[in-house]
Image 1 (cartoon, rainbow, N blue to C red):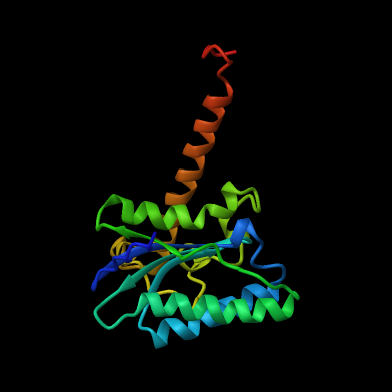
Image 2: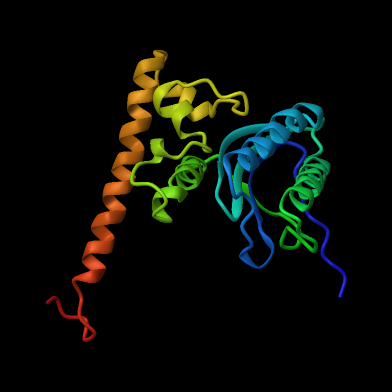
Length: 202
């Protein structure tokens, strides 16, 4: 059965997910992460892709991207994954498919989910219990937004820029926004764990 053609808007925002084949680990060491990071930084310019948020997890990657009529997202992802796979095969003496199928893409509307998507991406390492706080994970866009640390991958989220004309205030608002998200999730988990099998609190 032929694959359906991927629908990519001429102008818009998409949540991109690329996974390791059969949950295979994509990054084993700092060098792996840095190679992939450098490739993204180079190819985003060549293919005219803007990246608003990202997180490179051990076995998958997330990016919230903006495209326009000059962008070529499919070519960006194809080149990125092929070049990294070539590096990976040599570095880790591996043969076979590195990536699981094609990358996934979801169109993000200009609404509340636009902000939620960025938060979701940057909280991935916390949800996976890799770190306790999002700032402890090096390969995501969180430190850029929360602490103003320069990141050459990032084109600032327009909602972030509109939150305040003062950089330090934007960072404070962003930190509080993600902290509130973390607290809410912990409360939900606590509530779920407090239910017994009959649905009664114990």
